[in-house]
Length: 446
Image 1 (cartoon, rainbow, N blue to C red):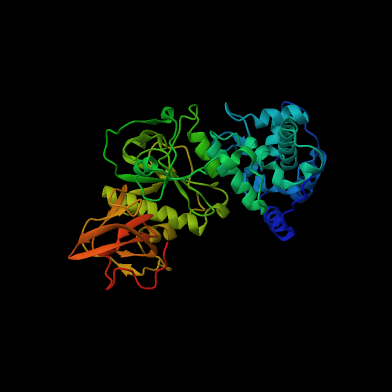
Image 2 (image 1 turned 135 degrees about the vertical axis):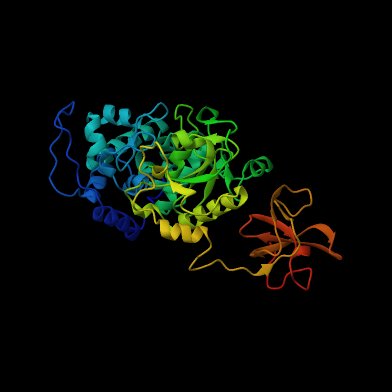
C-alpha cells in the first residue's frame, strides 16, 4: 500500500493556531434543545485535539479533516449560523436537497442536529463519520486509508458538487491546502473548471472570466431596466460551494460573478444582459458580484480578491457608463428593502474604491504601449480567433510572451508576430505595438 503522505507540521500547526486564536469558543445551545446534549468543557475549544480525536475514532487522516475544514470555513464555526446553502460549523455539514451531510452525520454519530451545528468538536466528529462512511463505500481500506493522497474521490463526494468539474475545483483546493499531489482516480479525466473553449469565451462579458452557467431556474432572461449599479456581496460559503448552489434549481438565487479568495479567480454564472436574483427588488438594474467568504471573518478578503474584484467592477462600470463612486457601487445591505448585512464591517471600502478608480499604491507594471483605435484582442493569434475586447489607443499593456501567428498587413507594415497580453487574456498583433522591430525586444517566446 502507499506510504502515508503527511502535511508539513508547520503548515498544519499554522492553520490550527490561527483557528485557536479566532472565535471558536463553544456557543451556548438553546435550553429547549430537542435532544439531550453531551456536556462540554467551558471556555475555548481545543480544536487541535478535536481533529485528533475525530481522526482516530473514524480512521480519517487528520490532514484531510483539517484541510476540508479550512477550505469550507477557515476553521471558524460562525457561532452556528448557517451558510447560504444551509450548512453549519467548521466542517460545513449541510442540509439541502442536494447535500445531506448533516442528516448523515446525525445518523452515523447519534448526535442531535443542534449539537452538530453549534459544538465544534461534534461538528468535526460528524464530518469524520461522513467521510469514513464514504471511504468504506468506495472500498478504501487498510493501509490505504492512512495515505491522504488516496482520499481525493472521497473528499469530492463530500462536496456534493453540482457537477464533476466543480467537484474537482473543490477537491483540488483541499489538496492544495494539504500540500500533496493527490491520486484523482476518475477525476483525472475531468477537465478543471475554467478550461476555456470558443463557446465559453464568447459567453463571458469580462475577459478572463470562467463561464459556468447558473441554473435557468435561478435568474430571469433579459432585463426591463438599464444597468446603473453594481452590488458587492459576500457568499457566506466557499467558492466551489457557491457555484454549486447557484447551479441548484432549488436555490432561487444567483449572481453574475463569483470571485475566489485565494487568487481572485473570476467565474461568471449569469450574463449581464440577464437579471440575476441577488438583491431582491433591486435586481432589475444591478450587476451582482459575490466574494468568497463570511462577513464576520476578514481572513477571506485577500489582496488578490480585492484587486481582481476592483478590476472587474472597473470594467463593468466603464462598459456600462456607471459612475465609479459609492452611490453606484454599493454593498448588498445598502440597497432598499434588504435583510442581508454583506459585505459587512470587515470589507475595506476605502481601499476597494481606491483600486476601482486606479489609485493603486502598487500599480501594475506595463512594458509596451499600443496605438491605433479599436485594436482587437483575440483568443488565439489568428485573424479568425474570437474577439475578446478592443483597445482604444494608446493603451498601456503588459506583454507576457510572443508567438508566431497569422500575418497582418496594416499601418504600412507586415508582421506575423502576436503578443500575449496579461490583463486582457488574449493576443494582439505586434503591428499595433509601438516598437521598432516586428519581434518585441526583451519578450520571451510563448
